[in-house]
Each structure stands twice: as C-alpha cells, then as structure tokens.
Length: 133
Image (cartoon, rainbow, N blue to C red; front, side, top):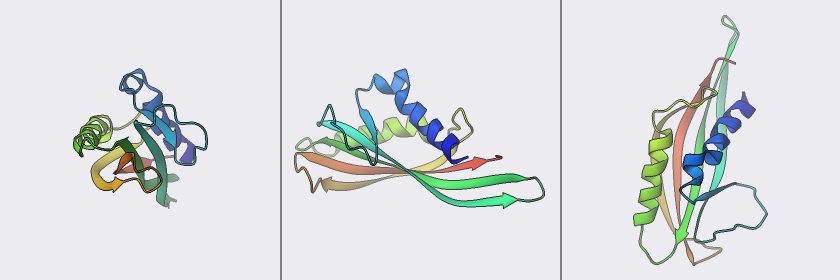
C-alpha cells in the first residue's frame, strides 16, 4: 500500500502535463544536482495512521503530501500562489490511478530559504487517503 501511494504521487510529476510546467520535482532526500535553481519542488510523502478492518480484510491509510516549493526571490509571493493553484488542479478532490484520494490543501508561505536566500519558499500540503489493500 505504501509503495502504491508513492507510485501514484511520483507518476504525477513524471507526466507530460507536469513536465510541461518546467518545474522539476525532487524527492525530499535528493542529494544530486538541481538543474533549475530558480524554481523547483521537493516531495515529502508522510504516511499517517493506518487502520485494518478484520471483517473485510482491508486496510485504510491516511497521510499528508507536502511539496516544498522554491521560487526565485524578489518577485513576491505571486509565483508561489500560482504553483499552489496548479497543484490544486492536479490533486484537490482527485483520485489518482492507484486509488490515492486527496482532499483539501493549504499553502504555508515560509519566506526566504535559510540555506539559499536567493530562493523564496512555500510549503503546499494536502491530505490523502488510500483504501482497500
């Protein structure tokens, strides 16, 4: 079930429609070179509570997807909000191919990145559920 959720989410960022945005998305623990340091996202999938129904022999898992979005400093927060709207179009209220269901989102504007003040950061979070495996 865990890998099914991961596959669902990562497939979004490998899709032609996401690639066309030009915004690269990297796993949260990525250590390689980031090709466009002006605009990118880090993906963190945070599984939460799971529950097993012994009568139906099914499992339910809830969690949070967090995307730390980085944009170039100096243009204000407009681009962060545009990217959050784009992410809402993809995730909010949607069910992905492997059955991961998303509900409501939030955007937390963090501000200047402490490691690189040339970047401005916001964290987009959205809850998910996965039923039935």
